[in-house]
Amino acid sequence: GHFAGTDRERFEADLREKEAVILLRDAQSCRIQGFSTLMRMAMTLDGKEIVAFFSGDTIIDRDYWGESTLSRTWAQVVFAEADRIVAERPGTTVYWFLICSGYKTWRFLPVFFREFYPSADAPTPPFHQRLLDALGRQKFGDEYIPGAGIVRFAKATPLRDGVAAVTEGRLRDPQVAFFVRANPGHAAGDELACVTEVSRANLTRAGRRMVDG
Image (cartoon, rainbow, N blue to C red):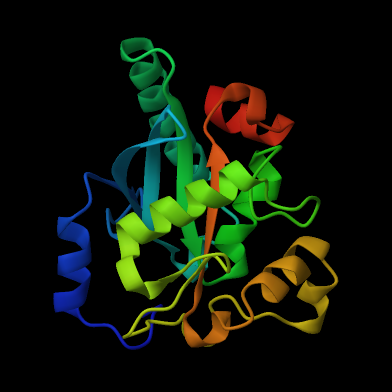
């Protein structure tokens, strides 16, 4: 109902590789009204131990747009797991690795995190570009375009019309305008690869409210 060019078989295959699913259910009917999926990636880069949480498809039904339940639940789950990882393996840095074909997912970054890449406010540092490229190649192989930070699937599943339409009004938001410049093929299903450190020092005030409840 939200993505074009997909089917149940592809959805199930994507779901099988994930480690966790966050489900939002309507309190009255218990019907699923939103979800997000998570998987963990690990690597050593420039001598640093890295764990990255990759977010798969994230959707909220139109009737529940504006609700913060998914953001709050996701933040509390991921930060609790990041705390556990760092406690068990000191020196490990935890990141959130996500791909965005719509500006609504992209907007999570400037709202909740102080530093993230790519960014409208600063060029991507060399280490973070290497990290993005390493994660992109590990997860998507030849469908990831190094340097550009774009995932171009052989069989794209773009968002349907009306799910995350970029209107003239939306383009007045500098963050949305940057997303469109960084991912000009978003309407056709191109995904922008992004990364941010999962640490409390990297949270905005809104991010801290989400994590701390």
